[in-house]
Length: 476
Ligand code: PLP
Image 1 (cartoon, protein in one colour):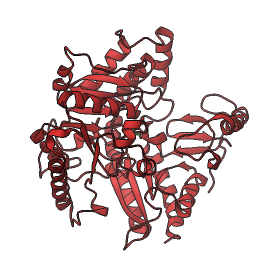
Image 2 (cartoon, protein in one colour; image 1 turned 90 degrees about the horizontal axis):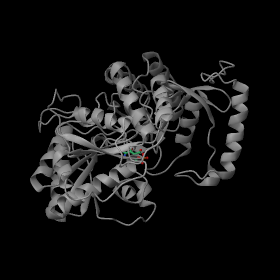
Image 3 (cartoon, protein in one colour; image 1 turned 180 degrees about the vertical axis):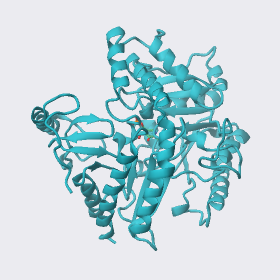
């Protein structure tokens, strides 16, 4: 099946043939003048997108495609949500920009809504332009608060593409280039499917990963370590939901040695896992609760949470750091040395206020949790049972990864860690031919629809993945 041209008019009201011509011109100008991220410039072929609505986008030929990527796991409330586009337009009419030293209603309201949704006493918010700079500022706050320099992050992580953030990142994008070290120390996190600890079950993996982390802290010297930074659920590196007790154990280690615990929720935050923040899936019990086991206020509480993406569904660039009282107090009488011209930009924060209110009033967080437990999770497990190329599926909410292997027994990945392969290229092409935009990374396809996707849309995505996995199986 090939996605078809269903209409002569796009959701914006624009005539399709006019939009197709504009898309063609966009493509030609792109190839002449746009320098793309993470790409060999001569080898890429960027698909024009001429319209978007809800869970769908329209490509340069006017074909409607299911957006199962949420645009780098970003559009948590789907495309063109009317409440958010209206809020941006209204804010632009009222006050389109103002420097960060002035109070403005959009930023103040946005900070209140975020502070009320974070766990514990993370009562203040520092706004940035995106996720990487949020992580950079969180590290700076932790270093100044503790007077220490080193920062510990896990292999198989992604924290951003700016200089410090890419050093925090533990994936091949860093190793391919020599960006230097910047005081970063990497460690292995829990990942039972490819356990470096030779564990046989989740509990063993949890205990061994925590022992490894504490040994690493001891060897580095606890008094030199400012922060441990963890994605609450690592996203780009493979959606590896930590086992029960792991996050609680990291919290204990941080408390024992006076280390700041930074949770990077740039990708996993704002509803993606079926909670406002992914860390809220993890209870404080060391052996008890894990994903979805946390109840009420019994959640692990980091000292700083970094966020971006889903905070306003990516409609206007925005990120930030939610800060607990102890760290905020460090800067009560001493200036915080850092800032950005667009910190708390009115258009971005007005979009965030409208996004958070829409998520709440339309029940999107509960929808994400229900889809994960009732449709997407069971559907992906069914695909795993029927396709030999699926090594593992894992995730929660609307945040799932399918790990593809060339050999089920050896778990040899269908593309090398850090690279691509003809098999993965064929799978991605099959998804697109059948009407879906996937999020693919190395040997994985991530199934990450918006939090307000309908049951039918998710079933449509599963059916297309089924066809793509038929192709994957031929590469075994
Ligand atoms: N942290 C995490 C967990 C991410 O997934 C990302 C981006 O994907 C970032 C940080 C960087 O965010 P940005 O691209 O907005 O700088």
